[in-house]
Image 1 (tube, rainbow, N blue to C red):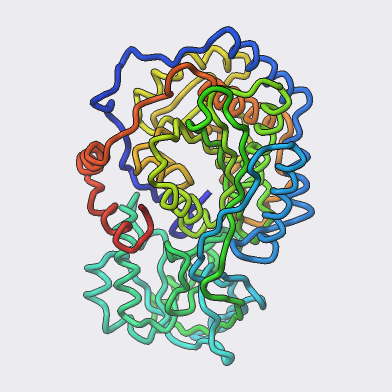
Image 2: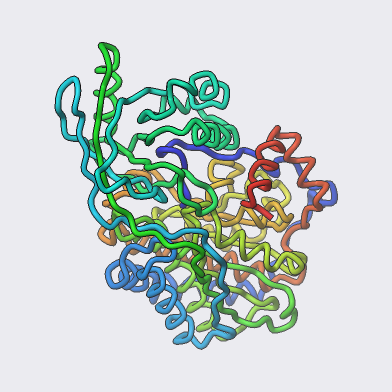
Length: 493
């Protein structure tokens, strides 16, 4: 899951909160007896014979961490194609997009406070940071108390040539993401020598990047431990603080990255498509078993179970494993952009990207018409304990459904408990030992049952929003300016 700005919960809270003007409030997607019978068969197969745990173990242990564009990511693409082909799925292929820069740490970061006293730092290169000069970076630290355009511009002379410290207090409480990235743009213009952001407690590394489009930052950027940042701020109360640090990263420019695609052709409506998706890339401190190995294994096991059931649904089911999610939802946006003239044929996009604690049901992203459409599906999920929906917008802007939303396509994101997930998300503890097999299977069964019921329904899942409706909703939620900012830098279609 793409998680931004020093682990803060930054979301773009534009949501399809009100019903689409064209929606019929009483409409419920029908589920035929034949569909119900096959859903029961699929659920039973997943819960008894599910292979998601095996898939996740192979991906996490045999391939390992999968920074987008890295050698491990390339291995993961080949592995995913092999799994799809072994299931005898149709049209197994890759679709490339171009990542402006790849990034991997080449040497460990080292650093210390040098004045007013010496103290070793818990320090790591931030994702998509350039290397430091061979001699390292040395300089005075300046604390930026507010990460806003106005605050950066007002202190520009104090920031130029300095090492700027930004922490969670600088970001404020629940800031608008567009405003924060505009502030980062202003900070770049101030020409700091380097920037320190804050990582985890106890000196733990947290994988993150502070560009939103796969480009390198213009200055070296590091994350330091929460305690290190607190110490520096306390020392600054009494006078200047100087630090030195260094690290080396491997970077490449304009690299082709592949998304992986496979299908089960529809039996009656093959030109209408239901997509089941998860992102294949991960951060590097752990092995990405939860984020997003569980999502990848969900996509694969949904494909396996539906294929094994022996009755293809009416619509085509397309299985999509995506790159570049962690760098700004790049792979899914590239896919949506390249298939933009086909959006009307996509009935629904289902995404798994919140780990493998037990699923409660689905995020409907504020769309009451989707909640209504799922009313006849929910009884199929009751025995799994996942027959519910939530209008929560918490993760609207943080995973691979959002570009489809912006193009009006109905989407669903699996709703899991996440209290354990966020203790290991993007950290060294995101490893296979954290995955519970029974809980993973329950989420897979939820996804398979819902996706199959939607794909096999005699009527479409929910209306597509028009561009005018999307704009109206964004404006009503005061997020139009943020959307325009991101669209302006090429992030969204």
